[in-house]
Every structure is written in C-alpha cells, then in structure tokens.
Image (cartoon, rainbow, N blue to C red; front, side, top):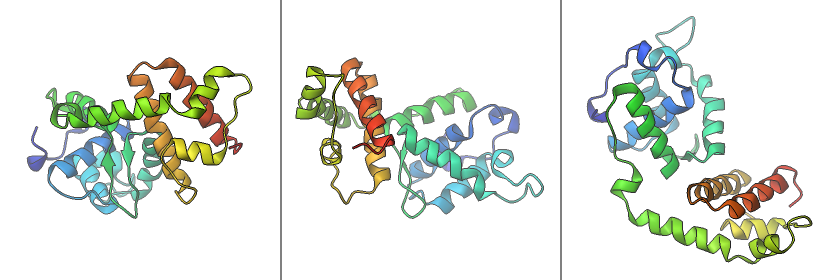
Length: 205
C-alpha cells in the first residue's frame, strides 16, 4: 500500500483493531507523504482512513477529536510515539513496528521500518544500552537491589534530561529505555528501569 494514494478502509478491515494502532498507522501514513504530523493533520488522516472509528456517533460525517485524548496518552506511555498537540507527532522504532503490524492486519502487505531503512539507529541504541549498563546508579542497583534508591537528579541524568526537562519527556525517555532493554533481552537492566519507574511514579526520586 502506498500512503500517498490511501483511501478509506472498509469498516470490517479495522473494527477489531485498537484505536492506538490505527493512530500509529495514520502517523506513519502522514509522515510517508512527506508532511509534518500535527494534531489537526492526524485527526484528518485518522478520520479519512477510519471514519467509523474516529467520527461522532450521532454525526458520523464529522471527526470527534476527543477520541484521541486517551489513546495518545497511552501511546506516549508505551514509547510508541513522541510529540504532542503543540508540536508534531512522530513514531519511535517501536511505533514503526506497530505500524508495520497494523499494515499487515489491514492489507496483508509490508512497510519498511526504521530497522530496514535507517540501520545507523541500531548503533545508537546499542550505545544507549551500554551507557545505561555502565552507569554508576545501575552498578549500585546490582550491588544492593533491596535497598536501592535513586535521586531525581540521578534519574534525569541517566535519561539524558535536565531538571528543566518536562516530566512527560522524562517518562518518554524512560519508556524508550525500557522497551530497548526488553528488545536486547537485558533482564537485569529491565528490572532496574522498572524500579526507576516505580520511584518516579511514587514521586520518591
């Protein structure tokens, strides 16, 4: 399927697919068309491709922007997208994988993901994993997991953030690191990042 010639999908093709996946695919479609994916552009693309999923129930000829609030929060929490309503949306490598899976569900065809079109990103991911594993706080975690603690400054530094970095960005970076640790099958690093997330959630960092 070529996103430049995308048309409305029949409802039976997407009615069982989660809205989050449809949004991810729509972001991919917009970006592949060479456009910036603003919130307004995303709403238009989702409604064009999947009108029954993103239209008002009583007025199906109009898109319902409220249907995007919770799914977009979920997508950021999962580390599938970055960006927001005041900026532009884009997919992480994990989001691109979901876009490919959604494409297969919709059409049976494949799309290129970052792994196949931008191999240098793999090297950057490897460096990030290495940096996390060589960090002082991770070594401290390995030495004493039971009494491990981490300060806010340590956590932000680990995630390449400053004290001025918005909390949502800190959470996005943490989720990306967690996804990466799972992909690389780094169990101890995954456990460490899960504990960091617990500290962040409880506001104990």
